[in-house]
Image (cartoon, rainbow, N blue to C red; front, top):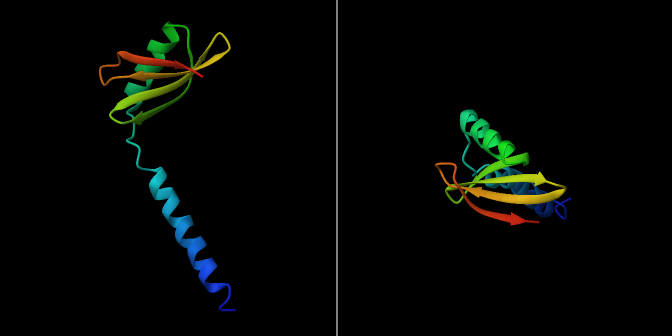
Length: 84
C-alpha cells in the first residue's frame, strides 16, 4: 500500500497545480473582445480565439482557408501577423 502512496501524492499535486498555472492569463473585458472581433471581421478574418499575452492581445483567426495569429497592442492596432 505504501508503494502507491508517493505516486498518488505526486499525481494529486500536479493535478492541483496545473489549473492554477493555466489561469495566469489576464481576463479580457467583453467590450474589448467585441471590438477586436469587429475590427478583424471588417478585415476579412473569422475570429476563433483571443488571449492576452505579454501585455498584448493575441488573436487566432482564419482567412481564405489559412490560419493566422494576429497580435494587437492595447489600442487595438495590429502590430504583427503570422500565417500558420
